[in-house]
Amino acid sequence: IKLIMNCSYGKFGQKPITTEYKQLDCSEDFFEADELFSIAHDIYAKFEKKKLRSFSLVHIASLITNYAKQIQFNYLKDIEKDVIYTDTDSFIVPKKIKMKISNKMGKLKLEKKFEVFKAFSPKAYYYQNENIASVKLKGFTKEFKKKIESMDINTFEKFIKHEGIKWEKYASFKRMIRPTKNTEFIDGYLAYESMTRSFPLQYDRRQILPSLLTIPINTKKIEV
Image 1 (cartoon, one colour):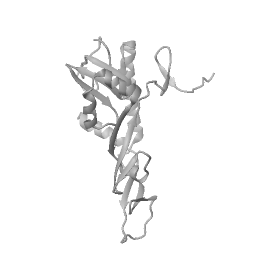
Image 2 (tube, rainbow, N blue to C red):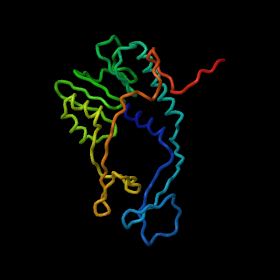
Image 3 (cartoon, rainbow, N blue to C red):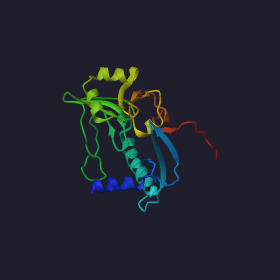
Image 4 (cartoon, helix red, strand yellow):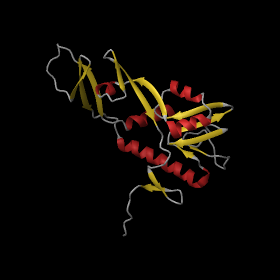
């Protein structure tokens, strides 16, 4: 049931515009495309389609998201400053706290226990349990994360704070039609992309108040 609910919720918020690419040949009839691109000796067309899906109900997805945020916020108010990291549907505390734990749907459950935990920025943290290290890095493949997990926490922190994380990957189709200085073509077709990702260590999404609550940045108080 939980899997069905999660899948349904995602479909409610799915955007109605889809992008498709098609390789053209000489036998093509006349057609209308949004953009044309050239890769080596081939021509590709880009099509953007807007589909009005019967299950696309963004207001329901927004309601579910904000209702879940409100439930989590009520938990966070109860434990106040004992929280060291929060995510979309979870939070991490440094010690055992008095809180009702349940495996029932919609309730809090104990997911994991950590011996070592260190967060560097949203979606970027390192944790260790029984001498087994794991990392959370949004936007990286599982294979790349395994390489990072061989580091100790000090080496990982050095990469995060100073050097950034560097890697190479096959360039996506979008990057091939809009190459950058980091995109390298081999034989005109296969493209590699050199990537370096740094992690902002200063929270800049919202303004943090002395009470540890947050408000949007650059807001003005309106006197009523």
